[in-house]
Image 1 (cartoon, rainbow, N blue to C red):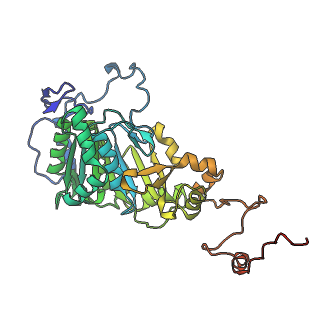
Image 2 (tube, rainbow, N blue to C red):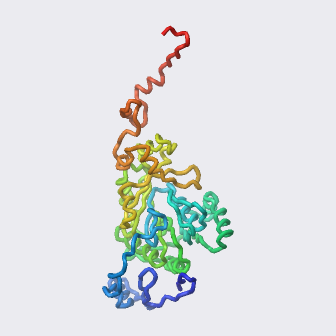
Length: 396
């Protein structure tokens, strides 16, 4: 069963096109065979013969669909499968929880990474094997969800908006037996639920624990991505899967961030958009500190993205520079524009090119340092006895 916009129940007949443009197979019992080609032939037989888009179906002469609809302007597109990659304990879950809480229980003036959020918000689904229920309760309190939920109930009713499923134990959404990658019964049940609940956003945390496949196999990760994208297409929800980057060092350039994502075994080839986050390189972080936008290196992040969505191409050229807020409620703050205004070399630093982050009084570059140690001249200046200040009766 699916629900339409009016909330009325609608049964999906075998062979009928769903909202995601897919065609459901007719009810039949699949053959018990390990022959993949025989399985493909059976699946094709179950589909209606008219599953191609013919030129007279209207798609050729249809008006331009326009720009890709966005949930978060310039960051999160609507109704696609995508990934968010970062090293462990960097804050992927907190970042997504911040967004999902604000979408489920919106309040006036809400933003995420400096971008405005839809005033009406929307329903969300949060699936995690990283956090158990007590930790999610603690996170909810830190993010101010109780106040948000109360505000929403008082102003918009008590509609159910947030669905959480944590600690799935041995359950997996996608499973590989070494020969075939396929969705499990849990994934099919979740997909059916999403068609009825109609969430705007769905989060899967993390990819390696929910998608139990060979993460180093391009074939298996690609098939798993297709399953994630199928969930997004059928449910109409943007499906975001979090992934781990193995490298725990600083990211000195945007290209390095991309290589770490591709080489960590966590790359999802088939998603429409891949977002990545890492600790900014020392020079870039120091530039933020010098500009008064951060107080320590580990507070500054580089945030980029790659995909086939034209509106997000800028993330692959000029990424965002983020600062972690003092508290979880502060979230992550986009300091890109402020940093560029304060330092003309930011784009070079993002490309991994070392440049002076500040200048001395005479306009020359400061002396180069090694590993942050002061130069001999600086040590001598610090240890020298300061000259006495001239008195009022000095003859000179």
